[in-house]
Length: 190
Image 1 (cartoon, rainbow, N blue to C red):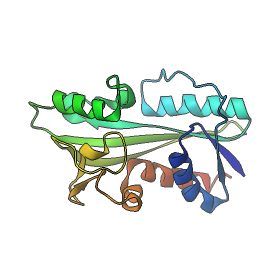
Image 2 (cartoon, one colour):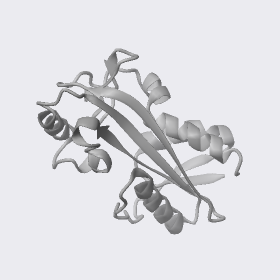
Image 3 (cartoon, one colour):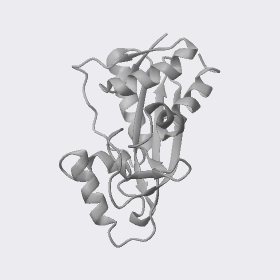
Image 4 (cartoon, helix red, strand yellow):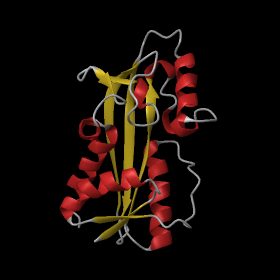
């Protein structure tokens, strides 16, 4: 059975294909000309569902979408759903902006959150969530990953997401946890 991923990110598609492939699901990419819906939701779950519904409507296939971000306790959960739009520029610019906003903060606890939404052909809508707890560093460490990974320190591993090998990160990450939760739900529905 084919599912469309409401994203053009091939790394996400590969990761989802590896986990959901165990259920006989083939994850295909969203066509390049598909519309990009405006993320107007107030939560990760709402934004993921907006994207999944749009992809399902456009392709006629069951659709999967995710919305994820970094939630910093000292910033009342910011950047949160605005993680990719926290400031103009590159990942490095956003990291610099976040470090500056946290300069005088002692509480460094934070978490990565990922909500995955799925829309099935019979109209069923599924949302699941995965989280990974960590601490925000004052400077970047590691060249792996993307986004806020070089600032996200995982105490149990003694390093950042930017320093972890990809296969370890995928096991403990917010997206990996959400994908495994989705797999558990789907195995009883398809």
